[in-house]
Length: 272
Image 1: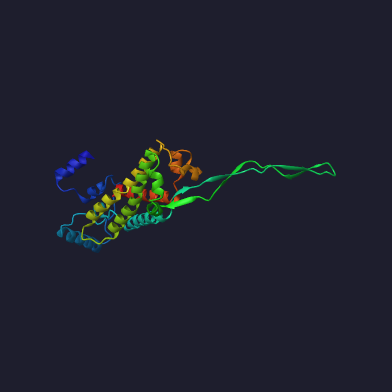
Image 2: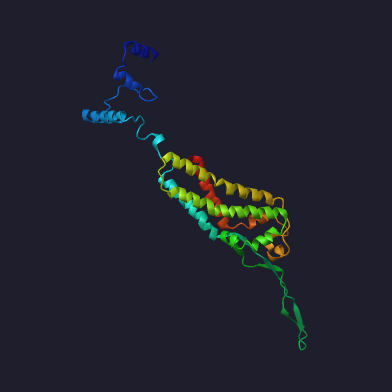
């Protein structure tokens, strides 16, 4: 093969028959046929290349540099994730419940004077608990009820106060970030495709911040803390003191839905 290359170089222009063996990265086996079906097809393709070169266009039609960074289908997915995050604000974010102990019944025994036999009129039942319907709070409800719910949180231990502040910022980001992303997706601009994609990439990076806040709140829950007076007595699901079990136990599916939406936005920001 090396000798053939040297001979071809020494002789001048490589013959078309020999060049055809080296199309691509592999050696073409055997002798190939005609590349074009007809002279008319060859002339039309050559004419198209000449016109393209005359305009200064050097890239191929399907070059990856000319492909959209964010396709229409991806825009729909990003818009759907943003809308889901906003709608999740009206779904349950937090849920607590209380278990009530049902007092056992006592056994009453009476005697029949005529027959002398004892008659049991009541039986003793075992002690059991009954769970009352849970009390839920939506994301938007936590903002509206900041005076009552926040008062109970801010009057608790220091760790619980920090978690309450973090989740408050998380809720505000749940409102702001999806709105900014929706505006960027549907905003009409004169910028080129690359500039729009880079601006969208910066906005999608914001989706990492609420996820980081949620992880920070979970880590803080390991330090524990005491509840405000009467809070633990009102809801037995909270336990006697705050911890990671109580933190995760109070999470409802609306809050988990926002976490999933932010993950979709954040990972797409990496791809762009």
